[in-house]
Image 1 (tube, rainbow, N blue to C red):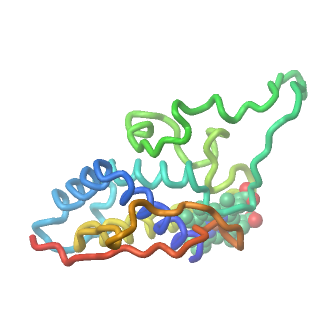
Image 2 (image 1 turned 90 degrees about the vertical axis):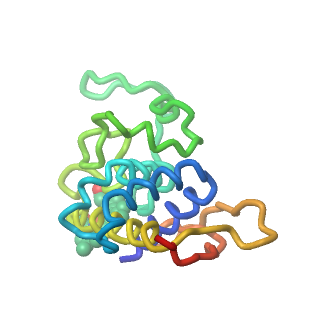
Length: 184
Ligand code: HEM
């Protein structure tokens, strides 16, 4: 699915630019699966830090543009609920920072109950592929982190994370990274 591929690409882009987060995610994957040398689906739930990395990637780069960002221009009252103007930015501390830890020990999930975070939508039209999509992301990323070490090609200081809109919101520039087969 394009949404899953896009999310994996964004996650890898953020990980490579946040080496400390990459190291922690890689250590977790290798600790859980290192001795088996393969990622097992029945143990994906043990990857709590990787789960937070995926959530944080989808917070910063929601892959499905179906849900266009919405904000009120002025404070409004609907059925007794007061919606202050431009509410979005106050939900997250350091919203521009890639910080998966914000999802650890947090009740905020992607299942449509927390309206500040709805990468799969919410309500009756919520994505029916949500759990399949999450498993795909965990499986794909865990394999990339278990089997390979990653670096930015020589000469590139940092990645260009400009977005482009299509069916899903992907990076404008193709992500190019150099994998090395992990020695363990
Ligand atoms: C990272 C992966 C994915 C993300 C972020 C994602 C996100 C979304 C979003 C935001 C919507 C719109 C919800 C709304 O209108 O409120 C949606 C709808 C939908 N998604 Fe996904 N999706 C993903 C993976 C998948 C997969 C793997 C499948 C199928 C196997 C799938 C099938 C669908 C379908 C059929 C709809 C339309 C539902 C409807 O209109 O009733 N999605 N998805």
